[in-house]
Each structure stands twice: as C-alpha cells, then as structure tokens.
Amino acid sequence: MKQYTDRMVQWDKDHTWHPYTPMKAWCAPDHEPLVLVEGRGAILKDSQDREYIDGNSSIWTNIHGHGHPRIVQAIRKQLDAVAHISFLGTTNAPAAELAYRLANLFPEAKLPRIFFSDNGSTAIEVALKMAAQFWQLQGEPQRRNFVSFSRGYHGDTVGASSLGDIPIFHDRFGHLHFPVENVKSVEELAILPSFLRNEVAAVVVEPLVQGVAEMHLWPRGMLAGLRKLCDSTDTLLILDEILTGFGRTGTLFACEQEEVIPDFLALAKGLSGGFLPLAATLTTARIFDAFLGEFEEQKTLYYGHSYTGNALACAAALANLAIFDEENVLERLQPRIVKMQELLDELRATRHVAEIRQCGFMAGIEVRESSYTPYPWQAQVGAHVCLAARAHGLLTRSIRDTLILIPPLCITEGQLFIAIDALRKAINEVCGD
Ligand SMILES: *Cc1c(COP(=O)(O)O)cnc(C)c1O
Image (cartoon, rainbow, N blue to C red; front, side):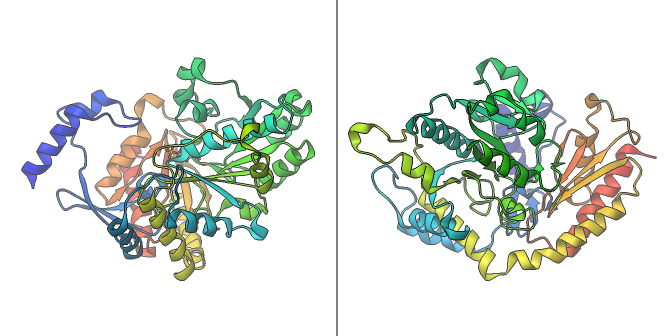
C-alpha cells in the first residue's frame, strides 16, 4: 500500500495542477498529500487506513454521506442501461423525471423550467444569458447591466467570475470580465442610478449566507427586501443556491425561509447528492415563454454543453431527492442544527476564536490574534489549524482564517462532537494561549 501511495503521489506531483493550490508548496518533497481511497457516510479513509470526518462535505457537495446505498444503486442501475446520451435533439428518462421533480418542489409550479448543465459556474452562466436574451426579446435592450453584491462568489468561468467580488480571486482577471455593478446592500441597490433607469437586467445574490466570503450572514429579511425592490422596477432576481441548496440552511432551499421565489435559481454542488457533476438553472414560465416563437423569429436560446442532462448524474439526483422524502432528512436534521449551535457556543470560549457565524447546518469559525486583530494573512493560520485538525480526525479547509464546518447532513451527533473538538484542539495547538 505504501508503495502504491508513493507512486500515486509522484504521478500527482509530476502531472496534476490542483485548484486554488500554490503548487510549489504542493510539489515540495516534504509535502505528503492525503490520498483518499474510501468514503462511508460522513467518514473518509486515506491510503494509510486513517479515518477522517468529512468536515466540508468534500468541498460542499456531499449531502447524505459517501456511498449512500440508494444513490449508489440508482447510478448502477442507470449505468447498466446507458451512461450518457445527448440532450441535443433527444431526451432521457432520468433528466425528464428530474426536471418534473425539481419543478414540483416549488409552490404552484412557480419555477417550472429546468436547464441542465455541469457545475455551479455554468448554472450561473445560463441564467446570465437567459436574462440578457429575455430583455432583448421583450424589446427592452437597454436592460443590459448586471448587479452583484460585494464579497459575492458565483464561480470561476469568466462570465460567472465577472459577478464575483473576492479581490484575491477576481482582481487579476478584471480586464477579462464584463462590467458588473457591485453593491453592498439592498439600500445601495435602491439608489443605484442604472437600477432606477431600468437598465439592470438582473441582480445576483447568494441567499442568507455568502459562503466564500468567510460565511458572511445577511441580515434577516434582506432576501425578502431584495425581492420586493426588484419587483418595484421589474428587475430579474437570480439566486445562487449552489451552496445553500439541499438542506444546508435547514430548509431544502434558503429562499423558502423568506418566502422568496426568484426568476432564476442556480443549483449545483449538492444536486446529485455530491456524487456526480450536475447543475440546474430553474426559471419561470414568464422567462421561458418569451423564448417561444416560429423558427424564423430566432428566439432560440443558443446555449448548451456536451454533458447537458447526463443520465447518470440525473439518476443520482433523483435518488438524492427521494432520500430527502423517504428518510425525513430535514426533520431529523433540526435537532442536530441545535446540537451544532450548542457545541459551537462552547467553542466560543476558546482563546483566539473571535467570531462564529452559523447558518443552519453550516458554520464559519474565525480565529484572530486578538478580538480585533487578525493574524497577518501570510501566516496562513487558518490553513495550519485545518492541517492540525487532521491529526484529530477532521478534514476541512479554511477561507483565510475562517475554519469552515459544512458536514454532510447525515453526520451523527457523536461525529459532530469529534469534529468540533478537533477544531478546538487544533486551534489551541496552532494559536497557543
Ligand atoms: C461553489 C459555488 C459556485 C461555483 O460552483 P462550481 O461548481 O465550483 O463551478 C458558485 N456559487 C456558489 C455560492 C458556490 O458556493
């Protein structure tokens, strides 16, 4: 096993390029990357038989645990039939049924149309192009602008990253981005000249919590207020629920908590239960109907990807939804959200824990040198704490000095205790007294 691991690590270091990774440090001879080989429920195992709690749901994707038999079986069954067929000019049963199921998750079929793609960034891109073309078709070509919120994150393709406002990720590529107006709050949007002149095509926001912005929580009512404001000028609202979808906030979707229905809803990460790449952009009948016309009218949306409507991924997503229903996942999650809150409250007493931001079953734990003094960013304290937590059985990542805890919904109370205890020990070890 050791020999096998060494060979894999060598091949990796020689030939791969990891996302968001300073590759010099990664490839250094003394860096020993974990080679993960197995997952069961909330537990991951590495090539040396060490076990870890998957504290960030494999980058926010996994929902009901690794190897959930129901999802595994659904994928196997579909695999026996066919893995992938084109959604261009033909259809397939898992994709059609998934569209039906997703549409029926919303009251009165308010989001009845589903466009499939492969990842969060493309789910956003689709919404952008639909919104842009919608206004052309409506005879309001002046509605060309897009507005996003400060510290927002919507993905890394050039279109999606145009909306982003995380300086370290986005500034370098500013010259490639299309112009987007950025506001700090709903109040700022309300006085934005282009908004008042009806020049905004759509506003994009991550509802309730901005994950990449170190788990920044929006004030209660922000989302409902934003919907109301958008309605006042007939501006479209795009909700990015790529992180918040599928139970993370305690409800199936975050928008339910403020009774908001967007014009576009972007879903990805947890859509397939975290098993396969799949995304969906849901929209209203009003948007869809604008694209209906005779061929010569050229109202068609010319957008698509090779793997649109992938049958395996859609089969996984159907199983994901069925598990929510049949295993009463959201009901059973509520006491564990309370438990997480209790355990985090205890963690607050730990020196150097400056702030804890929790939204449903997700939390960011910010460490600082002292209450108001952050550590110098070059010290990479958050990353060191996460590395130290591995020795205590927890695998997760930080964003700057905010430790991210986004476990699979299936994590047990006992595992949750171990995870938060691992963070406490790691903070003490790295930050000292
Ligand atoms: C992860 C994420 C995205 C991008 O999704 P990818 O699948 O990584 O392209 C967009 N928005 C939010 C809120 C996310 O968390």
